[in-house]
Amino acid sequence: MKTEVLSWDLENELALKKGAQIIRDGGLVGIPTETVYGLGACAYNAGACLEIFKAKGRPADNPLIVHILNPEDAEKIAITSKLYYRLAERFMPGPLTIIMPKRDIIPNEVTAGLDSVAVRCPVHKVARRIIELSGVPIAAPSANKSGMPSPTTAQHVYNDMNGEIPLIIDAGACEVGVESTVIKITEDEIILLRPGAITVEMLREICPRVSVSSAVLQELRAGEVALSPGMKYKHYSPKASLYLVSDSEDFIALARDRAQREKCAIMCYDEETDALDGLMLLPVGRREDIKEQTRRLFDLLRQADELGAQTIYAHLPTMQDEALALYNRMIRASAHKIIGGTNG
Ligand code: TXA
Ligand code: MG
Image (tube, rainbow, N blue to C red; front, side, top):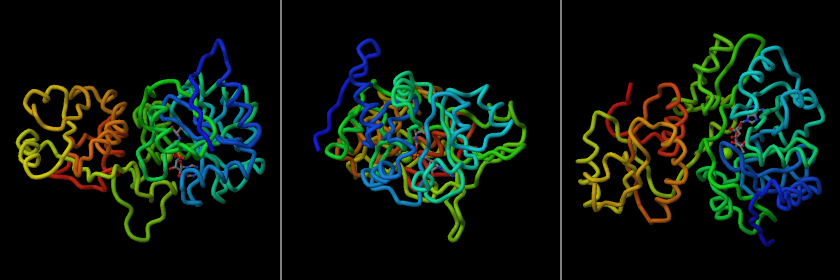
């Protein structure tokens, strides 16, 4: 199959109409969202959704997120609640995914046999227009090969999916850079399954009872069951081995030392580039700029592989507030290889 990459254009909606037609016909399309690019198919079409698993090489027990245009569209696919609407009013459209009991219209293939469904209402105008033109909810995981860093540009999608899907819609780099916050809700409680741009602190403003699933911060213990199946898989991993360096270490000295012995890429703060001159540098943004570091993360991990790095050294982020998403993706990409202690 030839994979076409078309630029989005809201005035001349050629690419979007083509994408919507493919989705209605049961095909797959690479779609930009504010978080990462998704691999979309009609959420009512079991066969099309099975093709998503094939194209990604995704384990069959890892369910998909269903994307809708407006919060009230969740009624058709899920059993909603007051808390859902309170959260929706504040955070939708936006980078938040809410897991609720599913209705029968959503095939078991989408939810990997679970009796719940993950609902997300994206804010990206191209994602929204595709959902609107398709006229159906769109099931879409991140558009990477399973285990690879999620794609934040159309080029990343092309690198992973060339030959597997007919169309990728290119709308430039994603604004957030990591996947949506995933939560499970009961009547009066929120459980955070995957941190993202909507933080624990923001959620607490709507509902004070927010707990963080243990898999967000650490490895699952042997035999422990993941609340979110995706959390048990190795994720976001570049081919190079990623090491996270705690603030207790001298990053500059360590990077210089390792560079003499290994072909390593150094993910340094912008302020450190002069001190590390001559090394294979992948600047992550300014030290205080967590948003920029988050936006660049997956692209830099892919770049390290393209440069042929055997190892990557990066700063270990804190777990505070908006840095939690960055921390979670980085410890998983590194398979918990931390040099020095954890940063409080
Ligand atoms: O930002 C995003 O969420 C992107 C864009 C494309 O919207 N999508 C995305 O999808 O990251 P994916 O499939 O890569 O991640 C979905 C996560 C997985 O960890 C999956 O296990 C979890 O959500 N999930 C989906 N449905 C679930 C359910 N019913 N119960 C528990 N976890 C669920
Ligand atoms: Mg994914």
